[in-house]
Length: 268
Image (cartoon, rainbow, N blue to C red; front, side, top):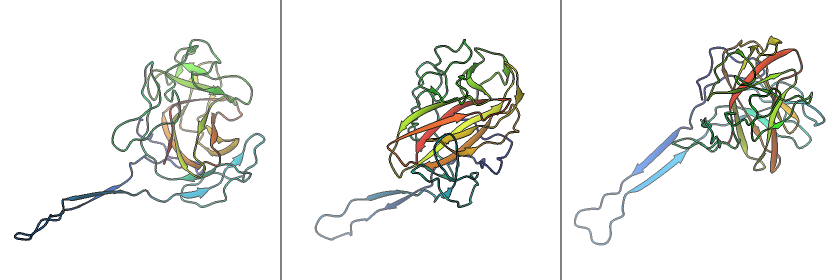
């Protein structure tokens, strides 16, 4: 993933760099005593990993699912959504990025990295990319107006032309969005990250960078509206309340257009 953009978060969603959990390694070596009989204990190598605590924060409802209204605020404890929906927390995240190209599986490897649960997270696989109002492979259309997103630069010319990761990104306008249903563990915390921006050009509409993150029908967080056409990184957490969780990234109602790319959902 790209580093966070120069612009900060709105009160609705805090912008923070993602950091790897602190690892403390305790090495204990027990040396045999000279002249003592019997076996000497070998060296011990214990490794522990600590992860910082998270804070609960609320979400507002979208669609028919109930929830507790209110923006996600970094470091502020609030009520969790009701009705069995996912709770949200804001806090540090772990690196998890998908690879570009034809085989975009969303898997991440290497020290400190975790498995990205999303399929095609960089939106590189897009069978009908040249056609407007289509959905990237592995994703479904969660648009409120029934119209799917567009692939840039394949189906339209806009700014930015370069994707945050790989060669293409999704451009959405007026309640358009993309979603996936994931297998999750009840009670587990999941980190959600993505890059977003406003879009100028393409099929028209003013530039607006706000995106809503919707978990099981509840808006758990929203990005700022005014980052322009600069790619900016977002991060939020939620606690799964079901063995299957649907997450939707949607451009809210309004005549503005924005871009999204390089998405990840990882269990913390």
